[in-house]
Length: 188
Image (cartoon, rainbow, N blue to C red; front, side, top):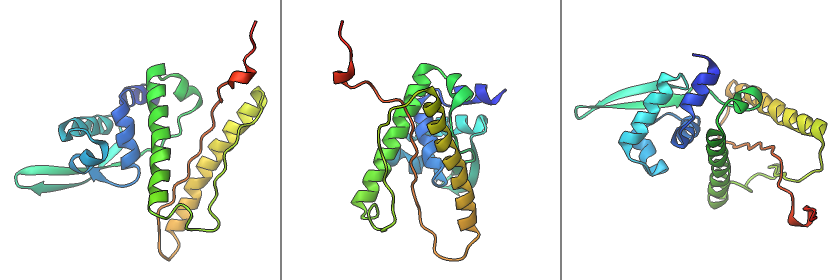
């Protein structure tokens, strides 16, 4: 089965995109995901096994607890869905992924603000703006986001090889077309 087919089948349920996002942070069991996702453990376990079958997560550990097997999963694929892969997903799947991604950005930022870590560092960066673009500017902006995403993996790998205390950092990269403002809509 091709990556495109696996992507479509694995991510055609919005809960799976949420599970994948959480398992990208750390290895968790269906029971540990239950309060976070507010879904029944059996449903979460089913979707974790589906992600395992499609090769997007792996078993990070197993533990026998009172006759039951506790299985922890971790994401093995970090996804940048764009271009061809994105276009092959159904509009419903794309919409679900987008909603979950934006919800995740808002949730992580809210947690950081409430946890007093958002503004903890003087050199933290927050940037958001709307720009006027043509097709070439759109392609360039999307490429900048893609390149930054790839560079962040190198930064993370370098940090892993250095001594010293480690801590979590969230980087959110979004590039999307903004809707036309009501004042800009031409009336006949």
